[in-house]
Length: 314
Image (cartoon, rainbow, N blue to C red; front, side, top):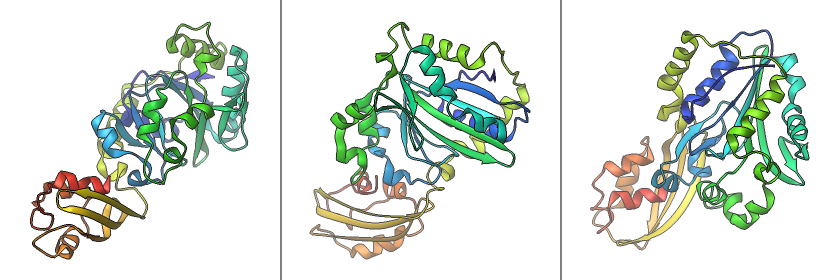
């Protein structure tokens, strides 16, 4: 297969590049490319970031949040992770479901496709992949864990009620595999990337990208993939409940979000305030959770700042 060169590590740009490679490049043959992201959490097309991601942890640690155009669950990326994408005519790309697993076997990794959308090594997951169809074209893209920071992965994806929170870091470590364990002949991820690319290309060269192609991706970042409306606003309706103790007392928030804004909200608890909290709930309907951070809420929650109440919704 010919390959595209993508050296960018910005998650928003790479999500835009995936979509453009699928919908904008009209090559009549399958193409692949290998790419990496600086620390980021990538949520699936149909997921709510409020339900799937530890947003305060991301903010505190400078981890980017992005949304992709394929379904599936949230994943953590860092520079210890190598990603792959295969795009092109539907009938041709369908032949490549097992191509990456086969390439890993050629490198000496006992990799096998699982029944759903994973690549396993001795029963442990080293890769998950997703797919999307656009007209007569298809994309398969996935992760390859080389040396991912599993502690950070667990924290970033650990939210109340999540599978990651329930199982914890020890369970995550026992269920996933970093490929460097199986490929000691490579000194690092760059050498692994070069070897994998050589196998997948099988003698083919690079497919040239025009300046107009890159400009189209830049525009998609500006207009879509880097915007709140896509990352948060695209989220489906989700209902949540959270409870925390602040200087004003214990506050419980029951709320529903649709398109990233409140469609239902109520507060309860033993907190102290001067005004009926129903006023604040009505004021926030149709607003984003982060809008709370811009309000003076002292009349409803005594001695408690907006940044504290905001944590109920993250």
